[in-house]
Image (tube, rainbow, N blue to C red; front, side, top):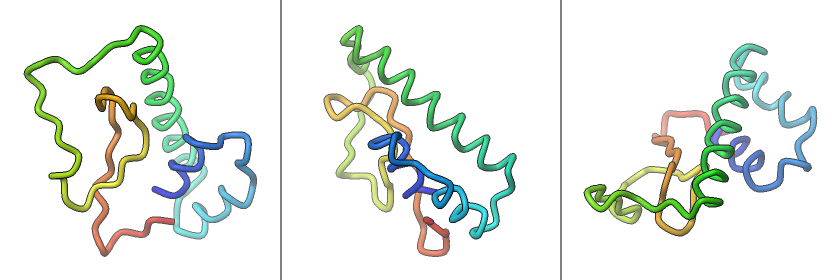
Length: 96
């Protein structure tokens, strides 16, 4: 799922049926795939709005990416971390 989310976020025009097939092979139903795509797309949309308006983090938010262990950043701004969608990746998870 993390690889799929990263690819959909960075190169959406490169997505194909094979990407969806890998999710199905990992046990996701069509509904699960739809839910996944909707969440990824929502956060991309929200981040584009925030970027377009130059929104930054509130001063009271302490977000230090380097201190988060075992986290893969899937969607988010590179400048400030607004709206970061992070998925905690454990060794037992399938990250197809």
